Image (cartoon, rainbow over all chains, first blue to last red):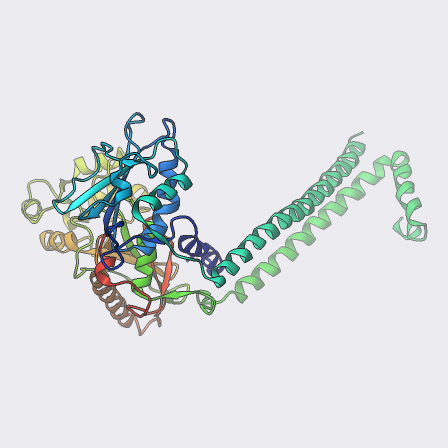
Length: 209
Length: 298
């Protein structure tokens, strides 16, 4: 099995899932308000390559969706990766009951409206959907819009998590220094070996002569 | 020669021999070669000793690192993290897997067996049977649901790199033909080569096919047993049942070879196709875990 220290270091990824953009709880049936009804599921569609403005959508999946899933395990989230670069890059949000005011305004401040995404599963009779066109948006902008539409409340990071993050940042800085230091040591050693080899070559040549 | 250079200042010592070399080149060459030979001899003799010492010092057991600093998780918490990592992945192909680290000797027998989960992980594994064409066992194997039955055509397909099966069973009557076909190089590394030891050379082919279809084989490699234990769509309860069945079976396997070597479970790690490995602490839930109903939603 992999060395335990490597595994411990690998588990830093868990902290990354707990804090950062996307670390928020979506309104559920217990926390829903009139403006922000409970959310039942999310569906994301984007194309495989980044050209055509699909980059942000993919980053949103990579960056934000794991955090959203961590804090909202009961919300179903599906992702469809298509090969159509001209096709949609859309996030479809399924609400229980009424659609929130912001999202029903259609292409307003939230940027939500009736996008046609053929890959999104059909809404059931009790669900309403709102979709956001993600083309040419970066993932942070997408996250802002999602927050505006859904009314997701961000989960504040705990002080110990912040401290841990700062520690990792310091470690990264230290790693950079160490890399430079070790590289110089290796280079010196290599130079010495080269010089030794040259000197030996000299002796050899003298012996030949 | 070295005796009088030893009295010179170091700088002169560097210069003098180089002058001498140009004067007495013929005599210096044999001297040098003798020196080199000696050095080579000395080198080899010194090389043998540390290697031997190293071999003696190596522990007979696999090294067990302390799990003191390792964060441990309840099953539901581990599932929560893994589901976050697997978000948006194809649920039909992503699986939970478990890595069971054993306390074990480096040599000696290893655990290898097959088990049937309470909740099936793989819908079906494709089984290939090698038996003489036209025999009774061929008919039986086909009836039991083998994907591929044959002798010569199977060998040819394997030689061409077409391996469209997950298990390979051989009838003893065809064993000679199989050994003649020398497929060990291709099948061996994949763990598919039939042998009586693994129970894949059997008379009653049909029964074995039936058993293998629903079962998962596992084996210990470097003191770790790795096997898939569930689909991502499983609920925590289903996963717990499968995990419990796995651990019980492995404990039984360990008890079966108890008289030769002592093996015990040291660490259980839950992982997934794209997720990290999380060490389990043996609890099902902690107070912060979300409800199990929530954790069953994909």
